[in-house]
Length: 277
Image (cartoon, rainbow, N blue to C red; front, side, top):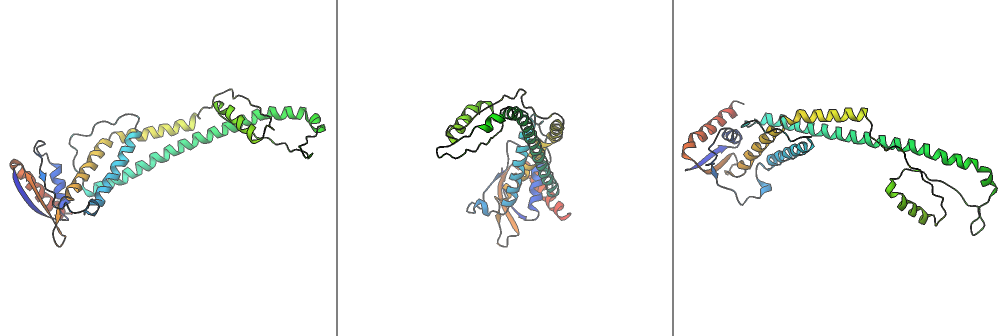
C-alpha cells in the first residue's frame, strides 16, 4: 500500500473518478480514502445536488421494480460507468417511464371506478322501479289518508335510494332509523349478479401496462447499477477538500502498489476525455 495525494481540477475530477470506477480494481484491496473535510455539513458539500439527483433516480427505479409482475433479471456483467450526457438521457427516460406507468395505472383505476358506478346506477334504477310500481298501485289509498304530526300539520314523504355493501346494510338501516326517529320505511333488494370489472377496455389497458413493464425489466437492473455508480462517484468527490480558490479538489488515500498504474491511467484518461469534450 502507498499513500497518495492528488490535486484534481474540479472540472476533470468527475471524468477521472468515472474512469477509475470503470476499470477492474482488486476487490479485496479497495482504495482507502481520507475524509479531508469532516467539519463540513453534509448539506453544504459541493456535490450534494448531484447526490440527491442520483438518489431520486434510484427511488424511481425501486418504485418501477416494485410494479414489475416478476423480479427483474440480473444486471449485465460489470456494466460500464455512464458519461454525464448518458446520465442525463437516462434520467429523462426514467422520468418518462414513471409518468407513463402512473398514468396507465390511474386510467385503469378510473375505468374500474366509472364502470362500477354505472353498473350500480343501472341496478339501482331496475330495483327501485318495482318500488315505484308498488307505490303507484296503492296511490289512491295513500292519497285518501292524511298523515299528521303532533301539531296536526301534514307530513312530507321523500325517498332515498342507493347501493350499499351487504355487510353494511344492518348498520346503515340503524343509522337511518335513528336519524328519522323511527319514521322510515326501509326496503332492500339483493343484487343477483356480482359486480365485475369490464372486459375489453380494462384488459387492453392492463396488457399495455404489462408490455411496458416487460420491456423495462430487461434493463432496469443495469440502470440501477449505473445510477449507484454515479452516486458513488459524487459521494467520493464530497470527501475531497477544496483549495482556497475553489478550483481544485485535493484527495488523500491509500492505494495498493500493484494498482498504482490503474489509478494513474484513470487520472490521465479523465483529463484527456475532459479536454476533448
